[in-house]
Image (cartoon, rainbow, N blue to C red; front, side, top):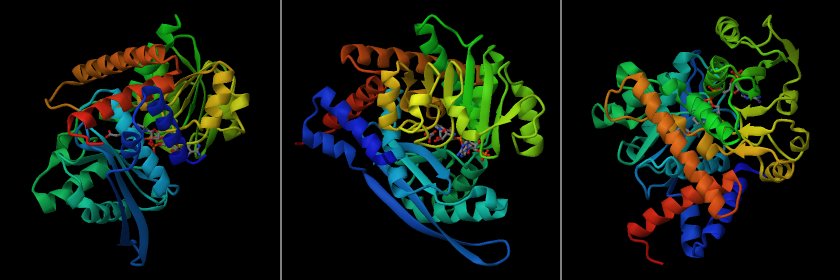
Length: 403
Ligand SMILES: NC(=O)C1=CN([C@@H]2O[C@H](COP(=O)(O)OP(=O)(O)OC[C@H]3O[C@@H](n4cnc5c(N)ncnc54)[C@H](OP(=O)(O)O)[C@@H]3O)[C@@H](O)[C@H]2O)C=CC1
Ligand SMILES: O=C(O)CCC(=O)C(=O)O
């Protein structure tokens, strides 16, 4: 099932549980605005190349729309729509005064030089600058983008609107970025994992973890799990997969990846087939890469007892059903990976304070999701969806919904 169909299905199920009127249900589903732009840039050799950029602004009932910008070859309108909608429920689950949006460019960032990436980011910003802003829609990093990308957006946007650092989050600290943003999504994943495990009388220490994706989110999650005494037994990225049942030395692996740009060739682990990672024997599986990776083909073979959705929509609804029948507990994306968007601050807090606040938000949201799932007798995904959808629906009514 494609990402949008899957996200719509989850939303509609939550709307039914909440007893929402079909008119408001449809209104909440339809995006506020969809933007599709052509971005043509000269490559370093002078040849012209065109890309398609998207920004979907899903809902602003609770505040300015907010969400990352993804650079990846698989970016397409349905996926961006799904990711924008997930942002609406995510900011509501975390109880942040924001709505939801997402953007992306269908490109392979590793095939572009830094100057080509800069030109592409600037052209994209030129095409959408009138439609983003700190009171309307605030981009942030996602797959394939980072603090540097945000700095280029900030700079290009400021040429049109005057210096505007608040147009993006996830920018470098030297440009007013929040301390701890780079680690925040991975850190939030770890706080969420701790909240879930505590509920089951467990802790990270001594448990085994498999992590798919070793970029921003995956590498930070791995580092923090390792620091807490968890055993990361397998990791992969696009360059390959490695395993060590005794636990991988994550700081050494980070040094290896920094030096070589690859996971393979690391002395402290064996290589394995990348697909095996999702079904390897472990206590906790953490997908930190693409969507739809858990599907009806592999869900039956998953051996983990817990799945923490650090990636957005990694679990197809068919896999959801199979995993739930097997008793696997899934911490849903709209809660588990909310640490990035929650890392927002109006003051120049130090990193300890930023992390304390993140922990407080993640713990509170977990409690509220549990309460919703108890009230409605549903799993954690539906607990999170009903929590988020209910908050957005209430804001919509208060602002003047007329059926
Ligand atoms: N960044 C953020 O703050 C947030 C991110 N997320 C979600 O987390 C996920 C990861 O994002 P992020 O870490 O920022 O992205 P990055 O681009 O930093 O890293 C993505 C990682 O996934 C790997 N990868 C890509 N394709 C595959 C594949 N087919 N199999 C295995 N690994 C693969 C990449 O490999 P390689 O390094 O070799 O390219 C890389 O290690 C996404 O779903 C994103 O939407 C959610 C909330 C916030
Ligand atoms: O920080 C943000 O605004 C959003 C990050 C993001 O794209 C996500 O949570 O999926």
